[in-house]
Image 1 (tube, each protein chain N blue to C red):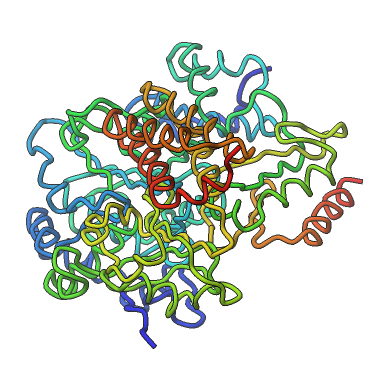
Image 2: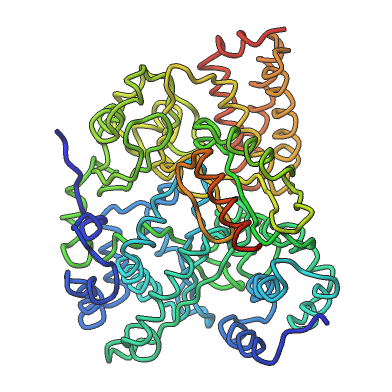
Length: 161
Length: 417
């Protein structure tokens, strides 16, 4: 059901207390909702959050579709982001992306059949001195080589086996 | 060999500096805040910052003290200070260093800034992708609440201040201050029509100052050492040191702290170790992806706001992207316009359509299907975006694109049909 648990509601109330209006907390609540739902917003959460924040469903949908990080489809257990922006792109970011597509058998925007990996081409991750870089879930990996990528993928597969 | 001038990275450059509250206090941290709360009035801080010549480090270089003085007093509404920690400009990564490695220097500056503008609840807007830095920052904030440096009656002064960390969700445009404020209000992050400027009607319709992380981190020094000590550093009208992010084809990419006005040649060859594999320098983008490109022959210019404006580009957030002789400027233009096309909020037609058509045009060159008419068209479409949009995004996308074809037409001609 699209609803925060009683325990999470305490976090929600703490957030509401920090803004002059409830709707100001919407961005943070969307992050919270994704955390509680394996990284995405399942059906019904837009309406639920609209009610919580005392706004319209359309407003919430407008916000969800504006920002890259809010998702309405489940990501893989390991969400792999590859930067191909200016410094990364000119330091081999494209080749990193190609390598990942090949290794994972998916294209950016797709999730692998076993739901283990999803791939996303992203813009600047603010560590351009460490180009090329990728981020897997929360972890940023600097100056990645193909060998390092293969190791990371293997490790993820092993952990989930 | 020129050395860094350490004002902001003073602690970070110490070996084994831990960056927690204890370490920060042991190296003299929070003395400036004590001085402020014990002996200064908010107006005195605004005056000191004005006198120091501090200009915003987020990109626009607007004088910070003047920005604060535009905020009306006694409006009956609360005043807000919002810190822009969105740091999304390709090539920029210096605020992350401050947040990750010396968070309390920044937070002390933030508290002083809040006191100066009469703010009792400050917000820090950090980009959504930066999950670990956000957690680290929250930990720093929590430490300050426990130590009585945030919350009610800070250091027994009677001053109350809350700080709230707000995470973005992946939108470059939210680095624009009015888009940031809309995002903070739970809306789509689209720039507002100005005026009114945030100083008059910002967060929740109240007087608001939006300041960058590095800008605020300068405040403890200005308070303790005085405005003159700050003004002595740098060049006239470009006071202080700044954190320069150097990336691309250099031997030692990274963040370097130097006085304003060090030449770009010195930054590339003395600090960043020169070009990788000792190749030749071909081009340089001096201020993040939004800044028009420079040719190698232009690097003897002093690196400060005014000197770069004079040669038709900008220093922005002090992000230098360096490219060697093997770089194809068409490839660089392609990366740049793809980024801007992806990040345009879509509100203004020149920007939404302009970035789309420029992307298609550059794609033609990449496919070796260019010609002279298309080069002229890139210049014309770019020009049509400059000064015709609600926010600076149109200029940020149009300026660099026009500069690529103007400064490196030979690279585009090499991709003719």
